[in-house]
Length: 438
Image 1 (cartoon, rainbow, N blue to C red):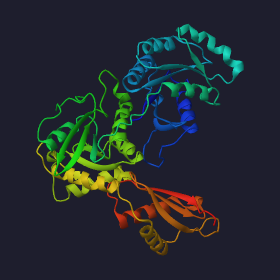
Image 2 (cartoon, helix red, strand yellow; image 1 turned 180 degrees about the horizontal axis):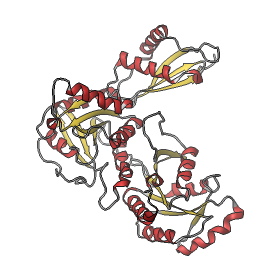
Image 3 (spheres, one colour; image 1 turned 45 degrees about the vertical axis):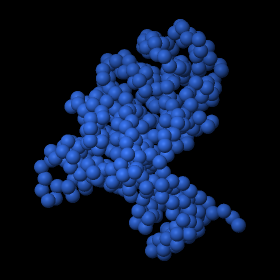
Image 4 (cartoon, helix red, strand yellow; image 1 turned 90 degrees about the horizontal axis):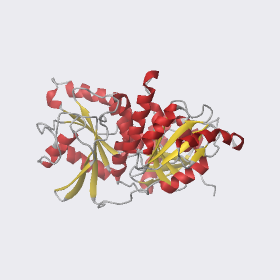
């Protein structure tokens, strides 16, 4: 699990600019695809071989100006619960404000590393603007310009020193690690209890009953599993519901650990924006995915209900079109047995490797059926294809014009890979590289 670095501070002090500067400077693992997430307030970053997840709290500010201090307190509470290290950003042009002092008072009580950052210091000649911030009683201030990059390297060098090491503790590799994800009260704990046949975790109608991730290990027919029930997408107690999106960070930790993610949907409520956001994170992190519609026993049905519901789900989650969809009732046990069977199938698909010779025979056929379009009047040639990794399955295709591969043709190739080799429940990554000379 990656350590988490959170950015907090008043509105308009440059939090998002700093977020973009850090991500843009050392971006490594963020997967960009249109329509996956509507707002990006986190990024997986690799800064000089140090991995961490960066969180920008600025995306969760309420509109009402008279609630600014409440919002700041909420952000600090969120950082306190979730982050390993905190960057507290202040505005060097505006100077020290009473609100900055209030935030500093909150952060001072945390038992976590906090970096006090004065932004909008555009160079050494502006350093005198930081002096008044020593009134906060802190030993070290870090003057930066997020917009121009001044002081960023020095700040991140110090941050890197205190970030906890990534937890490399590996559970038994033959265990299938399964994350159960979903909104509050969707039935995650109930599904675990039904799978296990006893009440391993507390089940309660009140959202947020599960306070931390709970691992449950068990065996079935010679296969070993770890089920991870997470409070990951819950409404924080005593925290504004408008900030609920921020709690996704708990789920990020869980997704990092799993082989297969099970996204539970509420049959009565359908797919919500929160569900779509969770699904986007699963897809971006390249994990196997299963969509499970729970509480199906509460839905009035006819012969077309399931088919129509399936269409609505995939219409909302187009980027998860490869994920199998199950309709269950954790309460009655209806079709719950199919969940583990599907987990087994998807887990196998995450590990699948296709021989290079087999891939290239298939590639020749795909090109013959639908040649790539021309690029600047030149014919695009696909010379060679190979699978370079699993989890997710990643393929490199060598071509004379990598920049000439249109998104629609990339989608065609991805569809052909699925049609030929399946990869049920697993996202596929395609990379195009310039053909090597000679």
